[in-house]
Length: 313
Ligand SMILES: Cc1cc2nc3c(=O)[nH]c(=O)nc-3n(C[C@H](O)[C@H](O)[C@H](O)COP(=O)(O)OP(=O)(O)OC[C@H]3O[C@@H](n4cnc5c(N)ncnc54)[C@H](O)[C@@H]3O)c2cc1C
Image (cartoon, rainbow, N blue to C red):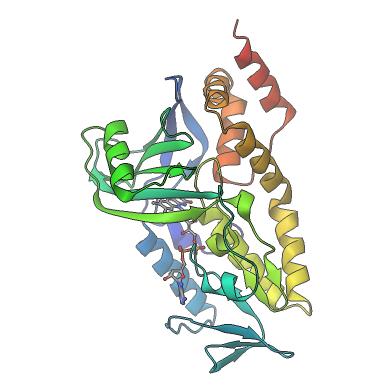
């Protein structure tokens, strides 16, 4: 995965082979993935990543970081740890982001989501239901292969405040009959609000760098990728510069395209077209999956499929 050489990350997980998407106006596409996807619960994924890092020589120490200060020679954490470089991978409420001067998360670039686990008959098929109300919003069912599924609902925060009660009610409305537990909620800082990821000897990765796909809310791929790029950049003479360049190389074009798509999909009707295009054109479906889950970009084929979806024969 991502060239990390940690093959056991998905071990024992049944691959998800199919994706069904229902658009805000009820257009539907159901197709097999070109490559399998995996739904691995976070406690399992995180544990495996930690074991792999330790096997490679990393030392795990747990503490809640409260302050991060740069000096002329390094970075001081909580007044008692001195590091040459710090990678802030401390999530959506990042202390490191605030303290290194990267600023907060800009308005209009945050989503809120809730998710839990529920029994399901689905074995290897993911479902996304895009919501017409409270757009941009969608509900999902991602089976994990043991008879249960990761089930949730999220929406981009606009003017109206979004509460946990509202998210829960909207989840139940879109997915009647499913009662996921325990229902946990969190903020998602979306990538159009990303800050400069490198500040001297402090680098930001994952959610701390607002690396969440604005179209799908997916952030694990970016978090693992940016974390590994930050780790490699930390070994260079100019970590911030090396990190910025590496991120630009791996994700720059993709992030520019998802920024544009996020603006174009502030209204829900382009999603109806996208789902229609994916239904009628296998390669358009594959492209959209890569844009939503990986580092895919817009291309002529996808634009052609959109144009055909505007005027279906
Ligand atoms: C409901 C919901 C469902 C989602 N579903 C998916 C999905 O299906 N697929 C997907 O790709 N993405 C999903 N995402 C997004 C994904 O969870 C995040 O993008 C991803 O977790 C980012 O990883 P991270 O390591 O940057 O941050 P986190 O996973 O948030 O990890 C941050 C870590 O830093 C620690 N930390 C925080 N503050 C401090 C501090 N001061 N000191 C020390 N440690 C600290 C935290 O305890 C935590 O361990 C979902 C998000 C939500 C809210």
